[in-house]
Length: 82
Image (tube, rainbow, N blue to C red; front, top):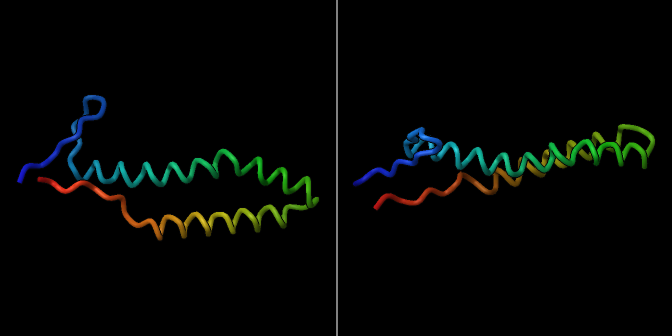
């Protein structure tokens, strides 16, 4: 059974390290939406409602949705060695 090795920028990664990168990449792709759009959404909701109660509750709800999506998605799939 041969083991696949991935090289990124001259650094050789084992299959375990590759798996960690795959999982982290999917998590970061979802997280970046909140990081980029969160302050904009919070500010818009503050302007709309005049307090931070609704924006913070909305942010908490979106965090719960994001956590649920990651939980349901499960671990990243890795191609089986041949």
